[in-house]
Image (cartoon, rainbow, N blue to C red; front, side, top):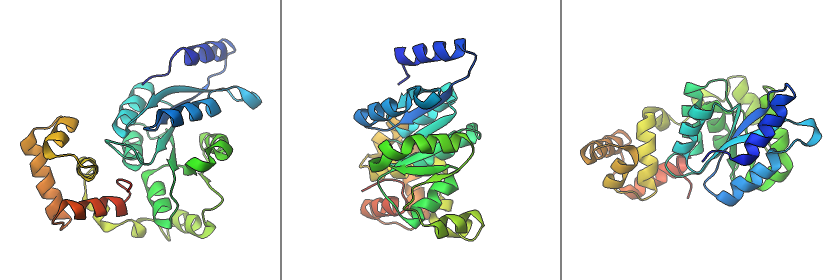
Length: 239
């Protein structure tokens, strides 16, 4: 879902003044949240020259829209259908490594902090604190800095950045899965059948079933309920 008339007006005014605006893509599966974030960001207050160039309602749409629009900053909800924010971040940065990524979340844990950093994202903002923190977060990441809520322990962040809590802390089982397999895990954990997975990913049903069988064998899982628990533990989907 691309930005409309408001973006064009903002862009034309800024370009006419010889300044290139900061382009922001917002991805969240709730329209009311996207509207609120746009209202916070798509203004010229305090001398800022930012514009929301596009929106997306699923992780897959975020990846495709980022590829098309090439935004400077992407704000990703961590829990979205089709593809979660962490995997969407990995895919976006694979094709556009200079894009700055911010993750939106309702959760806080050391494991989540490490997973966010591992994607290449520059930080995260609690949804409940977006009104207070989001502008500062975008300003920080667009200047090449990290942004984490003050609730995040300095020890966790410092340990990761100095190599004491990085790759070793990433769950081994996550490293076993390919990006395609992680997509399929999320869809299955969301209750999709093999046929629905095939339709969503433009695969044959036989290929989707083969992926499903390979995933269950690779992770040593024996039921969909075990797969759902795995997906929740590894932040592939949210409960």
